[in-house]
Structure formats: C-alpha cells, structure tokens
Picture (cartoon, rainbow, N blue to C red):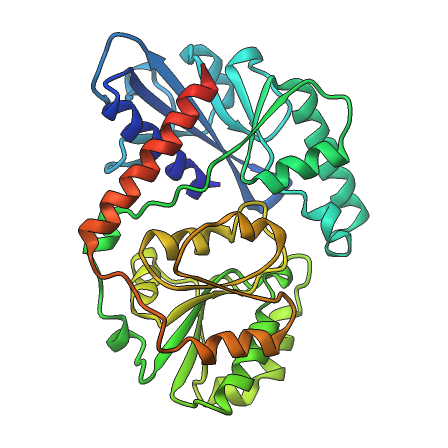
Length: 371
C-alpha cells in the first residue's frame, strides 16, 4: 500500500506542477489492522486553489503525533485517525474500509483474488473480504481499482451499489534516485552468471514453482544462467510453501543456479533489475496488470516475461514476452528463443521523459477523478 501511495502522490505532484494548478498537500495515515504484518495506509490530499507550487505539509504545530518523515517526497506520516477530521482535507484516498468522510473520501479495492482463487482463503478470510468490499461499495461515491479487469469483476460479482468505479491507467515511471544511483550487486551478491530475475513475495499465487520448473528445462539447453529471486519468503496462507520449494529444488539452490536473496534494499533490488537479462513474472493472479514488479520492469526499460492471464494483457509495451500461464514448457521456450532479442534500455534520459509522460497522464486522471 505504501508503494501505491508514493506512486499516486508522485504522479499528482508532477501533473499539478505541469499544469500550474493547485498546491497539493498529503497526509498518510497508518494503522495495524486484522493481522500485525498487514498495514493499511490512508492518504489525505488537500487541493488549495490559486497557489501554483507544491509546498510541504507540516502539522507539527498542531501537536500531531509524527512517527515517520520522508524528506525527499515531503510526506509526513501520522498514526492518529481521529485527528484526520480536524485537518479539514478536501479529499482523502485511497481508503480501504467503510467511508467515514462523506464526499471527501475515495475508496480503494485492491483485488478480488478470493473470488478467482477461493482455495487460497479460509472461510473467515472470504467473509471478511466480502464484508469490507461491500462496505466500500455501499459507502463511497468514487472508488479506484488497479485494472479494468478488477473493475469488470466487481460489476459481475457485486450488485446494487451506487459508487462509480475508476480503473487507474497503467502508467509506470522510474524514480530518478534509483535510476542514477546503482550499487555493484554483481560483487555484493557474488553473481557469476547472466541471470533472470523474479521480484515477488513467495506467495503461492505468484507461481514461483512454475518458474523453477521452466528454469530447470532451460538449463538443459543453456547452463550459463542463474535465476535470482528477491522478496519475502513467507506466505501466511501457505506457510510451508517456501520450505517445500527449497526441498524440491535443493540441488539447483545448492549449485547457485537458483539464488534466493529474500528481502533486500530497494536500491539493491532495482540494481539487480537493471542488470538482469529479463524479469520473469509468472503470476496466476493480480489486481493490477503484472503486479508492481512488472511496473518496475517497464519503468526501468527491462525486458519482461509475463504470464498471459487476462489482467496482464492490459499492458501494451514492445519489450514484453508473453507465455501461457501454468505452462512451464512455453515459459522455457520464451526464455530460450528470445535470448538474442532481450534488451534493456540504457538511455536514462529517454526513460525519464517517457516516465514523465506517464506521470502526467496518471496525475491528470486523478485530478479529474477527484473533481
């Protein structure tokens, strides 16, 4: 959720400044909810007319409890929900629970995985998600979702609600600090071969096992590669999933053909992305096209090997190579047959210009949606 927050905020600031419109001020509220490991972020955006430049929002004089401050993006985090109403914001988004802010609130539904893959959820999880989503649909005037696919699924699954649903356009853009500040990940992680990259948490629906099967096939024809994986190795719904994978692919892991790095710093992860032959996204389900690793792949000009599930087809880009989901042989063929075609865009100025166009497109979409 924090990733979405920064993504939307960056686009709003850029579009707002480009159009010489309003000052935008952002408050991000955080709370632990349902599970200790799950965090929900709430953003409050205030649009003030007649001012042209973005100014830092600072409420320290009002004695709000501050627990984090990110200097680069001028964002202050608070953890007292009851204080939000006193700040007199015009718009608050994206909210993931029943609306308490009237027309100021804009809701957010991240995905409907519990409907597409009900076996991934307990009865309690499904009941909870349905209740929360119905509360959102019945209490907000406007709701944002990550894809046209999710929007369509909501209309198919839920009936008789008055909210208008807005699908966010797929508009990836790079962060300059990560584009220009790289670290020597080849030396840091002692990488000896060319490598493919998977940057997903080890959740079962992310489908690492299919990628491992495909890579095992790939190695029979080209053993000069490694497959590097970053991201958390814990899946709350399937706590044994990662350990079972480790046992099954023990030999390849022992030989450093499959390398599990776990959670690493953002700059390390994006430095790996810029060095890899291609990013692989084998996912079986996403609320938004390709998930955020696909977003980053395109933003930083890296070739993307992507499962051909419906939501992923919303991405239009020349540097994407689709494969049949749940077909390890097709994935292996895509990896093998396109080795000479894979290319990473090295021109950083081009990536920034292209990203800025996407920033403006997304920001204008949000500004128009909030009016």
